[in-house]
Amino acid sequence: MHTHTRLSDPFKPYPMIQDYLDFNAMKELPESHAWLPLDELPSTYGSSTPDPVPLINLKDPNAMKLVGHACKTWGVFQVTNHGVPINLLEEMEVAGRKLFALPIHQKLKAARSPNGVSGYGVARISTFFPKLMWSEGFTIIGSPNDHARKLWPNRYSRFCDVIEDYKEEMNKLAQTLMELMLGSLGVTMDDVKWASTQGSCPALQLNSYPACPDPDRAMGLAAHTDSTLLTILHQNNTSGLQVYKEGTGWITVPPIPGALVINVGDLLHILSNGLYPSVLHRAMVNRTQHRLSVAYLYGPPSNVKISPLSKLTDQKHPPLYRPVTWSEYLGTKAKHFNKALSSVRLCAPLNGFPDAKDHTGVRVG
Image 1: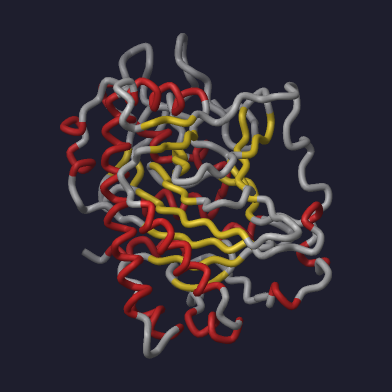
Image 2: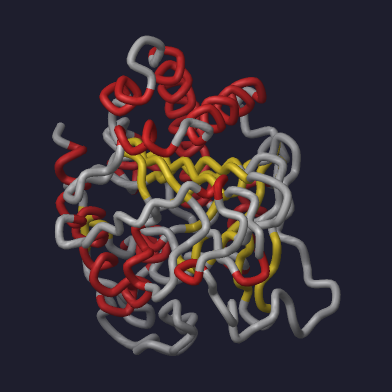
């Protein structure tokens, strides 16, 4: 299965930004990274104490109902009792910190190629913004061996072992979450044949947000939605993740020891025929602490077309989106960014069906 090639294909038109900073050497925020104002909206508004992002114990007998409600109302939630060993989460954090602590010239040995997806580099969404982001990333699709060998020529195997163990546990959790998310819609895994196979095309994204000399004017990762079915984020113990909730504004997702953050992605929005919103989120930085996050990006097999589930459509609720493969959708995202969902939309919503928006806040259809 040529997963790597297929997922890479949509990114070939992307220009690469080769403006790599040694963040640790920066005493002032360079103009290239100065975002002002950060947003038209303050971090929260409309409520002095906004509701917190839902926290769900996956061993709760009502977990399916709770997950469904969180998906419909937020598009994001945190989970505990998820089955991923805590020591593995800690090992993953240690591995990530070792990677990003390497000197910049060493990290660049594993730099992403202009046509590639895997490796060290800046956020791909950088091309859509006039300013650069205060972060660096490392993307892993398939085996991490080739890149790890360039970073640690004689002692790369431990890093690779941790990555493989982590991906295996995350895939198990993603399957569990898909069962709950689909089940809450009245759909079983048998209704979605590919969902129960091991042929998914996951990617692992390690993100580093160094301490910043002027955090009020910097952006760690600009607002975006994920192109996935779902994303599992380990955000460690440093705050920075914010999600956008309609009517409330930007809300910080507090790190909870041992918990994982689950984001609904664009493909699950399509699969649910608009019932589950893909959540707009961003990462902020701070003055004193280095923040590390690890995102497991879970999607379907690359040749599977994703379209609204037939059980969720009828004459009153026609399919809102045309069928699209993950690879094709990534190409659409590469061109249209946060308006990608609108570009694969078929028709306007009818009576009784939730209206959809693109992720600029403009109604579509």
